[in-house]
Picture 1 (cartoon, rainbow over the protein chains, first blue to last red):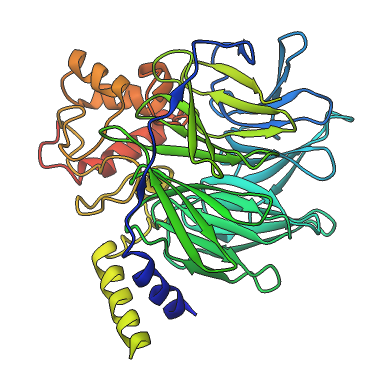
Picture 2 (cartoon, rainbow over the protein chains, first blue to last red):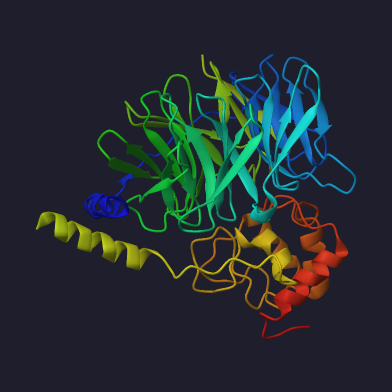
Length: 331
Length: 133
């Protein structure tokens, strides 16, 4: 199986990445953009829509789940540490099918769940023999299982019905970072240090590596569009790339600039692809059908947006460097 | 034949594109135990280029933001203009709470608040330095 993907990579590598057109830059803070200040030290890493119109974010340095109410601008920080001497450091946060916030908590080496109705926090610790995993990001399959990555070289799953936690080693070691589910429920993750995409067999847990054509591209995050195509943000190469599972083909676009670095990727409800590009300190929307790029500058230098999520008509941007959240209305 | 050629080309890509895997730190070994927190982003092999942080060989005493082939953040480059090299004291302060020292830096790691853990880590890193201080 591995050889099949290598053969494919050899053919695909003959096509160089297409240069992206220079993005059209939106004027500073247009009407469809709102910015919210956060409490000192919150420094949002990841972000997710909450079911009641609020916004969740992982306050990694603070060891908390942050809850922003965009209607009032109020912010609440919910400490996640459970037990004396425990130190939380959440990296990722997503909304589960149960309406709860699910966080990958590197500090406690655990998956954390915050129930907004009861305001209780529950932890699923990784098995003892896993060691420090540097937990990164999570995604749900259609059976309600929470899949996650750990940057020290693991991926795994929590079954909330049985409370079972399973962990596997990435075939190439350290690096597992972003993870996403396709509309059909398949789970893919990318490895930043391993520079690969991988598909997880949800029955056996085995990961099949899919090598992108650009060597050492630094695949950091991944997201699926409505057709199940995987969009990958490439940190080292400064490219946005797309893998089409049905044809096993890749296409890539190289962002302009001296040293572009593409960190986050997200596909919205209209199949617009959003990325953050640190070299230009901007969030950029890509229209794949028209191959048009629209840039939204960070609120100031070093915005450092590490992840993007959204909901219908809204894109959420956590500025970890400025300690702000930007919300872009898309309709 | 085409399949064979494709396979051969794929192997070449694999060989050219990856360095030998650096063994992960052993959680049972003092020093390596703490270095596990750094391992996903930092290497102890200068040949390793595919991790998001700069390698930490000779970090003790090294000029800040000085690796020529690493793309440091503007904030770290600016910090380096005011603080020349990684002394024990500066590194200890940075590892304890990176965001407090370089607020706009790209390293998201929340830090190691325990001074004993930091000492253990720096003792370990010192063994990888040629200019310990």
